[in-house]
Length: 187
Image 1 (tube, helix red, strand yellow):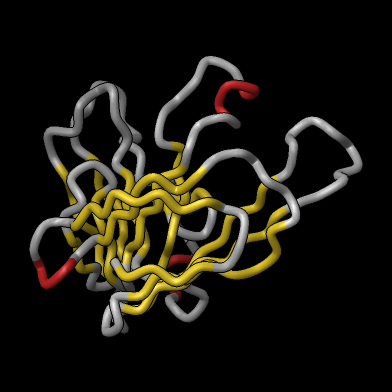
Image 2 (cartoon, one colour; image 1 turned 90 degrees about the vertical axis):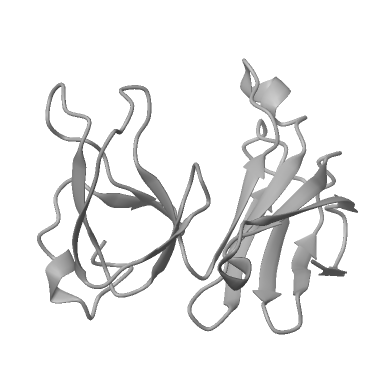
């Protein structure tokens, strides 16, 4: 938490919550047999992973109740774009054949960014890689992909979900976008 919010001194002593990558806040239930989690949200915007509900952090501890025993409270950090596999698989080999869904969690300024690195997942020395950079601007409703596209994974982006649109529900845009070159899409 400190590395994501270095100017917030309250993040220095947080022991149990953390970011998984730059954009996914993990706030686990830490008491045995409890269905309540209390955790700190910095002064920023977040989105519930499961419901896509907007949660405005105010630099204080919040509590959530009725957390099922089978889930962990997770939140997208505003300003993040996260690439998720569209489906799960039983092996890494099969998972690499699954398409991607893009989740856009706009920040307070309406912008978001993220990245996706692809390689063959097997070789120690890669013949080709892709390092794709994503950006989004709420005002123009444009999602852009740039970066390097040396490795063709044979998969596509099959949907883009924009969270927090005008306080309403997330908007899901089904698309077919190959991950083989730069693109600008209206979402």
